[in-house]
Image (cartoon, rainbow, N blue to C red; front, side, top):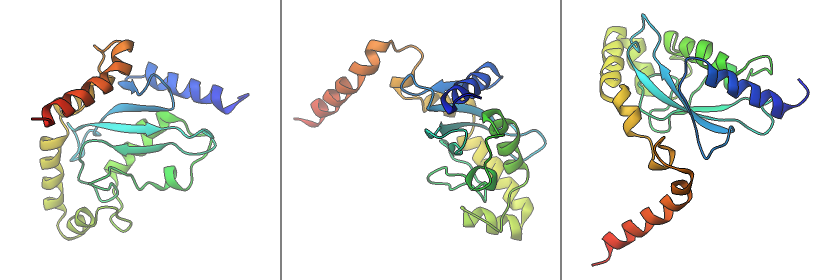
Length: 186
């Protein structure tokens, strides 16, 4: 690869050409959301999450930043922020990995094999270690409540809607700000 930017372009394009739904943010390729489905034969099966990805300028030499936008009950995912505790992304990232690895290998492995001894969600880790059956029931409840296709499509901002034109992108914010201000004034 001749430059990190060419590699970034190639990796994002590979992800977009795969079976994943990729939603660019602000028409760039450094920040986007990806529709991610829970792995088969796991308590997360049937769940659909929107995962936010930010690529640093030094990508692929520096790992992408990823986080779940809709809620997930997992020992290694912070329930409030969606941050992911995953060594291969946070500590042992290599330029040999690409974005497809994140969605085809790393995240499925994280959901299939949680590590309760290094938790970001203490409640999930504790429940998993004390009562795995109850843990799996709670995971499935979260999938039902927060991780269905309609949950992620309802969370899309108007700015990122496929129906919005480029002109609406720049004008939409000031109009909504005016609307909010207008409603607040008596």
